[in-house]
Length: 314
Image (tube, rainbow, N blue to C red; front, side):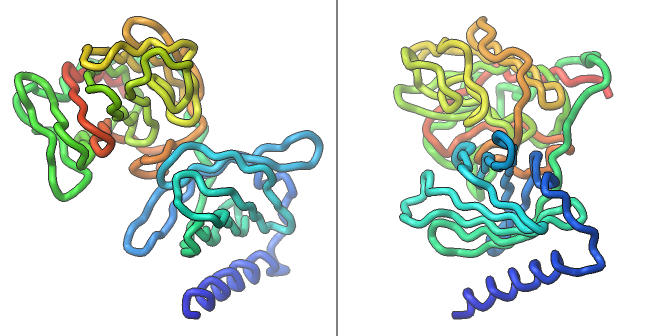
């Protein structure tokens, strides 16, 4: 009963804010665009993301990224008098109910309630995602060796324990556990990274801690945004170039603003494409800010070596 009353009071406050006669009327197209969301889930603050598009003459559709998983399509976004709502079915959740999204757009900011497929209600706020356009081509600075080959200095785990170890010049994740994150943060850069996984394993390289380049045992499969080399849930490689498990493989990744190029095992598989927003598992949704490199260690064993980042000069 307390939870129902809490949600009712929150939505009543939001509706009252939107209906304040002193506020100017909201343009019916004002919700269109990309939104970086920050969700309060108990004692945790987690990132989320929303895109709203116009389909045809009047129907609004979109995509939504939760704390985990990939971008999910929204069949219909309802928006009127500054109030927006939609529902989407579960993705990885083992639940039957749709997730419910209700918010108010006021002064070009979103605030509202997300009710999960499990029935839990979480408040959130949202702001327009930055375009991250660059006025000129980058001038590259000196390369930085992110992994010294001897220990995990310069990195920290996402959890309380760190199962990552340095063995013979290789950053090794022997079993599922914490992700590992650079202490340094970066804006635009070129990243060279080599990796090796056993059969069936899965990892990922997160750019600025927000955009995952998938690392997975997918040799021989058709390309997908959620398979090897894809920007998870968003950008699909033009071919599958994954090698067999147990072989060393290479990514050379360039990130400039939102524009990304991925060269995998010597072949350009994503070329100067725009990343729409954060992917599932992102550290935060503060896209305008620099961010770290983080390597996924919670999906299985993985090894990395020769991790070299070349930042753009400021």
